[in-house]
Image (cartoon, rainbow, N blue to C red; front, top):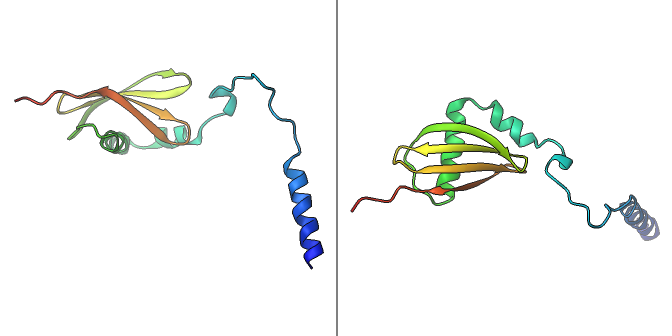
Length: 114
């Protein structure tokens, strides 16, 4: 029994090493990886759920936002989907969808009034 198990383990290890590795010095781009299924999932959401998704991304990034008042899709950046998002407190953010459903949030929150 142990011999059969060892043969199976060795066969699996040998098969795992099959295939050519990518050539060294080759830059892989987002387009080379093929379409990200998360893009289709976000695009299929109704506008209200997209706003909730962006609101949560902003909150998780630690930025202030009470309510999203405007979302404008922007041109892709390095193959990634991008949106400009404005909150009711006047803060404006740029949200970029990274591969695998990770949102990168950047922007300038509106300073609080003294």
